[in-house]
Every structure is written in structure tokens, then in C-alpha cells.
Image: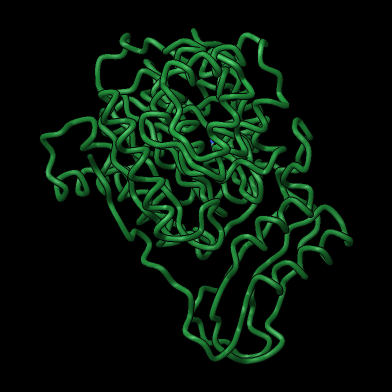
Length: 435
Ligand code: URA
């Protein structure tokens, strides 16, 4: 295998021989192919694509570069959910304990904020004391005792992906469908699951905004799961507006807790229930869609899901009092109400603008390992389609100081578009894909 020839073949649009591609990837992992050659290969793959066979080789090499978790110590199905990332997406925080309350184990391995999106780990860490970097032994123990555990990716899981991802991040090669599909699925396949739910976001706030491309990504990931014996369901869900009202780590955690208490925004509650029903059916196939939905609603209404959340927070070292005293979550010291300057109809609430606003307020990272301020963000109080009069409340900015309030107000005002056109509003769930 000559690395330059592999790059040239892909550059010219040829399909690579599986053995040659494998050798190339393995040599890179051993340090025998340098980053500059891998970067050229990734750009060629980004522009020319990878077919299903090539994607399969990539998945295998990523998976085999690390180890697969053995979670067979828990006496039941193990189902995780992965979201491709959006603004205000705090579903996981309510979903994992809810599904655990339905007798399905949820070993959830999550990420930090990426680009303009916040991450589940950062939201959990807004709870004082909550630890997301558990040892594997402790992760297994929490999973067995609570029914769910929520941690970050460990070094053992798909380390080849970790290196390729870091390279893609700085070479303009993240948003290629086969590369994303292989990256996500290699990590999920390494978790030792019995079922997987994918939440593929569609709309201007998603990494792949266009509906047709998001569907192609979903289809590819479902096919990869199916080919390797992991039952996988993908939902296409709306990200043309933020999910719920809260955007920003601590504010989102508080909103997820409200959802577990049977309160909070309707779109968040609905998506949590839809996803919980899917995960229940992935774990226990005998449930009809209606029965699964009923059971999920009951677990939310009875407080069983909230009780699991409390146990999860305690088991991972966090202050479970936040459930009754949300003011114990990290909060920002300055707040400002932002009002509509004119009357009119809200046509769009742009999620990306708000996500970038959170970063500008210090609630997201511009460099790896940067500390973040968990208290900053937005409460967005209008939705596409709302009719407003001048002086109506658009939302509230949470910032650490006056300068932040100014930055945040501008971002919130910029995100809320008003005018004559039709409101931008995709269905909350626009598609469901299975093998
Ligand atoms: N998330 C991942 O884990 N990998 C990608 O390539 C994109 C998003």
C-alpha cells in the first residue's frame, strides 16, 4: 500500500479496494501515515464520497482500534440514543431516567458542545458535583443500580475515530455524510448495546440542514447498525427552531428537570415521550406503539422518571436537591428582558444565531478544553407563528455582566425574525427510518 496512491485513487473518484483502504487506515493508526496524508485523503473522501463497502471498512477499523464494552452484567436490554446535535436539545437529560424507569437500561455516552450546539456533558456538569468522567467499573455499577448512567467517551472507545475527528474538525471535512455516519456508529457499536435510537436533526440549526441529506445520513446509519446486528431506529426531528425555551447549559438542565416534573414546554415533552416510546420498543419488542407511549406517559406522570433522575444525580456525585431547588444550579448574575420593537408575526427563531450567542456569552467553547460558564444563555419566549405587539417579551438574556447582556440582547433580537412570510415550522418529527 502506497499512501499517495490511495489518496490519488480517491481524488480521481475510484472505489478503493477494501484491503488497501484497511491497510491505509491501520497504518495511520500505528503512526506510519502522517496527518498531512490523512488530511488529503479525508478531503478526497469528502469531495468524492465513500460507498457502502468503503464506509463499512472505515467503521470496522474505528471499532477495532479500541474495545467493545461488555455490559452483559445488567439483566435487561441496553438501549442508547444519539442526537446529531441541535440548539436547546436537552432531551437526553429527561429521556435516560424515563427509559430506565421503563425497565430498559440506558448506558448513555455523550459529548460536549460541538460547534454552535451545547452538549449533554456540559449540561449535566451544571449540577454541582455531577461527575461525567467515571471509571468503567463505576459506570457499570451506576448502570446496574440506577438503570441508566451518563458519561463521556472513554479513551478505549473507537480511538481511531477520535484522531480522525480531531483532524476533520480543523480541515473542513466534518460535514461529509459517510464520515459522520462511520464516526457516530463506530462509537455506538462499541457500547455493547442491544438497540439504538438516532435523533437526526433537520433544519437551519442542524449540522446537515437539508432534509434530503439528513435523511441520507439517517439511512446510512440505520444500515450500518443493521449490518452489524444492532437494531437501529432513526427519527428525523425539527431543528429549524430551538427545542423548548431554554438555550444554554444550566438553563437547559433546569428545563429538563421541569419536564421530568410533568411541566415545561410542550415540544420538549412530546419529543421526550416519542423517543422514550421508541427506546422502550427497541428494548421490549412486544409493546405496540400505543402501549409504549402509554407506559412512557405514566412513568412521567407518576414521578417514576423524576425519581430515577434523582438516583442518577446522587450516584454520579451530584447535588440532587437541584430537583426541588433549581436555584442551586449554576446561574448567571445578570438578566435582561428583551422586548419586541415593532408589531408583527414571528416568521423564524433562528437556532444557530442563539447557539452562537451562547458561545459569545462564554457558555460554549472556541478552543478544546476551555472552561465554560454554565449559567449563561437565553429563555426564548416566542415561537414561529406568534403574533406580537410592540413591547411584547421576546425572551430573557442570562449573562455574567453588562457587556454580556448587550451581546446576548443583540443575538436574541437577531434570532427572532418578524415579517409577512409564512412561518418556518417543520413538523417536530418528520420521518422514521428502520432497516
Ligand atoms: N458527531 C460525531 O460523533 N461524529 C461526527 O462526525 C459528527 C458528529
